[in-house]
Length: 96
Image (cartoon, rainbow, N blue to C red; front, side, top):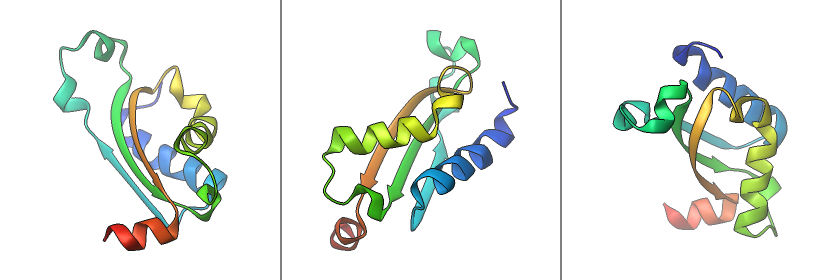
């Protein structure tokens, strides 16, 4: 398991390699979950906002699967919980 300060950089690198996002925001929410049973394992809690053309034509479940697949090496060790917002560029433009 890597140190918490390196996790966000690794998450970004894996997502950029796998999904080529035009926007990739990663927020560490681990401090909000201190004392939580899952936090004892050392895995962090993260919130993602990704905008990628890879999500075009994909339902939400398929988009989340793409994210989980990109982060699979970290899911059982460094990431305990992941909140995902996965948008296409058109959806992101309409949301702003």
